[in-house]
Length: 115
Image (cartoon, rainbow, N blue to C red; front, side):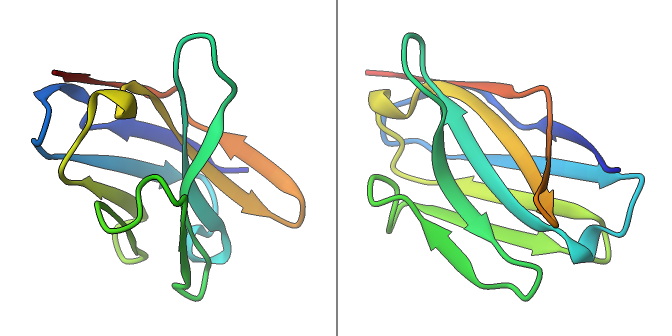
């Protein structure tokens, strides 16, 4: 099992930046594929970005060129740098870890972008 704790959310104006962190504990972090997902009010949870255990990244079209996902296996931490934020990026952002079909989730961190 792995436990995940997100941090770094907050209120920012449109065009601003935030960095989210996801700290993992309890298992071998580097073995997990990691990802960020988000859920806006009244909408389904959606994929934002993923990074494999080997470091390959994937992004939703809506965030390409603005968001950067990364991981530091020495710190058991994943990051999401969000630039040029838009009001439509407002959501609760969740950290996900996946291995062998098992998925683990953090509690989420709120990101609010004001216009």
